[in-house]
Amino acid sequence: MPEINCPPINCASTSKIYTMRPPQPQKPRLLDQMREALRSRHYSRRTEQTYCLWVRRFIFFHKLRHPSEMAEPEINAFLTHLAVREKVSASTQNQALSALLFLYRHVLGREIGELGEVIRARRPHHIPVVMTRDEVRAVLAHLTGDKWLMASLMYGAGLRLMECLRLRVQDIDFARNEITVRDGKGAKDRMTMLPESLKKPLQDHLRKVKATQERDLAEGWGRVQLPHALDRKYPNAPADWRWQWVFPQENRWRNHRTREEGRHHTDESLIQKAVKDAVTKAGLTKRATCHTFRHSFATHLLEGGYDIRTVQELLGHNDVKTTMIYTHVLNRGPSGVRSPVDGL
Image (cartoon, rainbow, N blue to C red):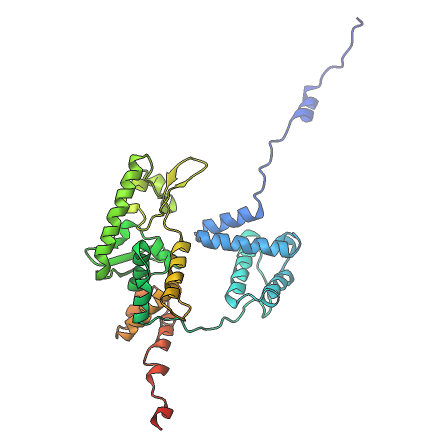
């Protein structure tokens, strides 16, 4: 076999040929960047979901164009479409705008200029729906069990629906008759009252919840999710009774990744449906919802002569002007004035 003369190998040259660059990290997708920016600013999970939904709709409206290639005219066109074609409310239109402004300012790093009048829809000022005391009593009479207890707390303490569902055992102080609302609307904590008439039903309810948690612990579960990664700082806290939900869901959920089982709080749709059915059975013609209990709480306190500043603190309003809307439905308003036709 003839000998093959190979040219000498230049190590320097081959190092240039065969040296491979390390793979560059893949840039996160736009919506992943959006979620990261929202979480780093401690926006709620609901806001995160809503904002990402509006960004997705904005992109699909413009035939999958990247937002970095678009600016004010495209935003205006999308908002106009929402108002004119889809006939969304002013608050929905402004919510979509807020999501897009967040995207451009905090994800794409661009300031949006003048968008015109269409972007800031004028929100109508509605008088809140308020039930009378008899109507509240009638609605509560058609609720049972934990649904009755949740509705009674919303009316008796002025809680929003999610504030009620997110109550933990340690948030209720039976000795001081106080309820601590943590991380409420606007990421604010506040104190409100624990109605005296609800103390015993609530204590009976918590005894059942504790028995359920002890049974879950015996089966190897019984842990809840904690806010702000507190479970890493206090590893035993998720199983602590103080951190358990006051209104846990009936069935355990399973984490398909870790195979862990636990209980979240009751889903809001269950109490919403129960209240809707109770309103129908009570024969009310008003469009009363879970939030109507909070409106009724504020109005009935003002009717009882309590100071509006006190009601403001109980509701957690930043500005007393927000609380003053309830003065429009008091008996001291139009319904408290005697019409001149009645004097004829």
